[in-house]
Length: 238
Image 1 (cartoon, rainbow, N blue to C red):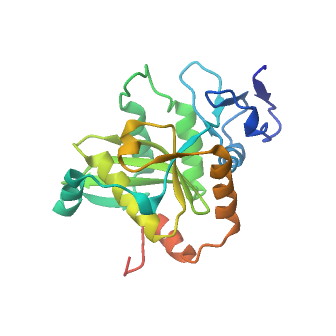
Image 2: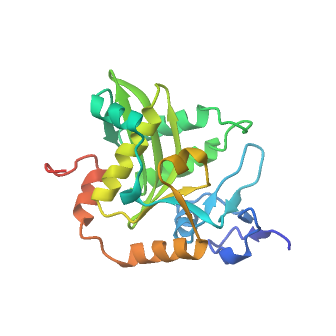
């Protein structure tokens, strides 16, 4: 079946059921804020490399982490309790993206966080949809991660570290707080041994889409706390 090519003047996507077995759904379009948000609401995300057209994906099954099922290895638990790191939210979004872009990935030649991706997600950050978590050690950015928040779903995008355990600590800190805020899931997009060790699991794409839809329809009781968290100013008792 020919790959679906997106129209330049529309943010409509084909049904995700038409994705190829590897999850590839469509090609083309742009990275406008409207198109990106429409994609995430349908369980679709862009992923492509340098000198490639924009590719849109919707894998089945989907790798997700239910925050209340987070598994912390004993060694990382000791790191979290040691006070070695401190954490912030949305303090250095662009620096986190740049750190993720420059981090070598096993089996990957180059980076998928190309300049237009950085610009697009920075725009989503300015609109309050894309967020970063920073890990600090001795006043320096030691690692972090970024992603998209819609309703009670956090769509994880990428992470990096400059000091040992810094990205793992950022992930653990974020997921623990997502659980406290009533988030239903963290989307991990692709299955990796790294995320499975943290308790991620595979769910059918149809179930993943039901969670997204329910998450945006049901008002979260902790809505004000969520807003404060992403502003980097959580309530005193948080």
